[in-house]
Image (cartoon, rainbow, N blue to C red; front, side, top):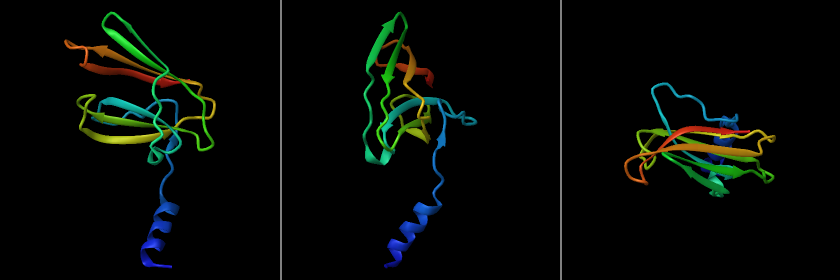
Length: 123
């Protein structure tokens, strides 16, 4: 076994698995600005599109209907100043197997593309 292969195995064995949660963690001094839901770990790049988008007045929301694959469902929670990024920090959570839907609420700014994430939760 090569040294690089051994280091990869060691890194995988000592990596902390993502916390199981239904919403993104609060990060001191940071604002949650973007979320991305994945079927399986984010490294597999199987991100899910919302099943439904609704707009009412100055708010809009996305709803995902969840069907977990064998690896489970994950959410990248990105923190920063704007939805478009760049992001100061990204935390990954694993959704509980009981989660059936997720909803992200946004406030619409002066331009339709000016969205501010106001709430995100999975149930």
